Image (tube, rainbow, N blue to C red; front, side, top):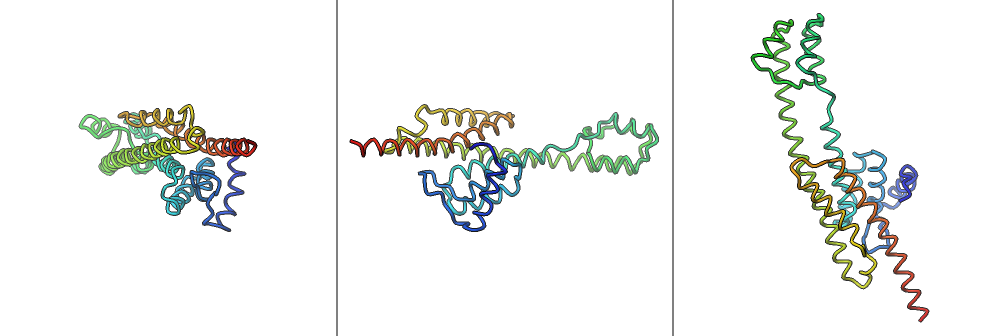
Length: 248
């Protein structure tokens, strides 16, 4: 909660090895050591490791809403990292390279590495031939563009699935808070509904045709951080209330 995630990792990693079934005993919202470890890995950019830890957390406690939230955020960030490919070549880039006497075979290798941002139409093919393109280069451009189109469709489909997963995780936290609000300590849980308000903001962002992914992620992270703080606040308030009752 202090934001020192490398230090948190140095504590959580040995505990996960020594006692992999450890579950924090001090909250109504149950979290295993794998949730804590996964969150620290997430915050230090170790997304692949975080995914594995959070999946293990959910296998241990299927109702762990914080693990479900951070797993959804991890999957979303992994999808966005894959989507952020190097800048592809434009038609002008390829034509310029050919006019500068770069061998078509070398241009084809660069195209394979970085991709192209244009379709091979009659006009663009004519322009490239005039610049010095051969059949091998033109065929490579067709293949690369076709593969990129397929990847884009797959990526968009996976992003939609990640968005649904995140919306489900956020809704689960909201439902959990609604339930806790009706318990004996309900007055302590999200009393001003700040967390639930941010959850609604995130769900609304996710429902848009083209979500602002960075805003979605930052809002989801805020919910996760604020919920963890809320757990500590509730524990403190419950202890103070118990002491007041004992003094009566």
